[in-house]
Image (cartoon, rainbow, N blue to C red):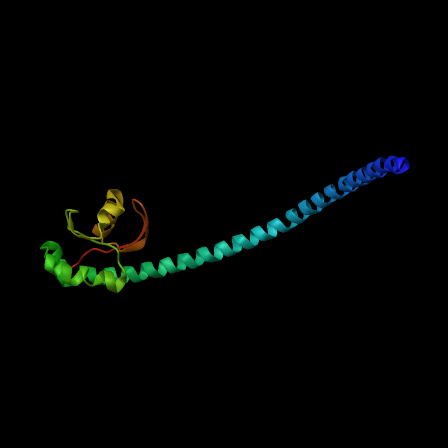
Length: 172
C-alpha cells in the first residue's frame, strides 16, 4: 500500500504537466485561428450589412419620394380649387368640416392640414400642424408658397418627421 501511495503523486504531476503543456499550445492556436477567422470574415459581413442597409435606405427614399409626389399633386389640386381660394379669404367652419376634416384625413391618410392667409395667419389647422411643425418651418413653407413654389418632402418637426406639401392657393 505504501508503494501505491508514492506513485500517485508522480502520475498526478505528469498529468498536470501534460495538461498545462496542451493548453499552452492549444489555447494560443485556437485564439490565433479565431482572430484570423474574425479578421477575414468581419469585413465581408460588414460589407453585406452595408449593402443591405443601403438597399433598404434606397427603398425608403423611393417610398418617401412617391408619397411626396402624391401628396404634392393633391395639395396643388386643392390649392387651385376656387372654393378653397374663397374660403381662405372668408373662413367657413362648416365648409372646412365638410370638405377637409371629414374627408381628407380618411381619404389621403393626412394627419394635418394647415391653411394660411396672406398675412400668415392660420385660417384652418387640422391636427395642430402649425405647432407640430414649429414656427420656423411654418414661416419657411409660407415664404415658399408666397413665391408660388410647390414643394413636398420630409420636414423635421418639433418631435417627429412630417411628410408635408405646400402650394399657394390660387384662383383659377
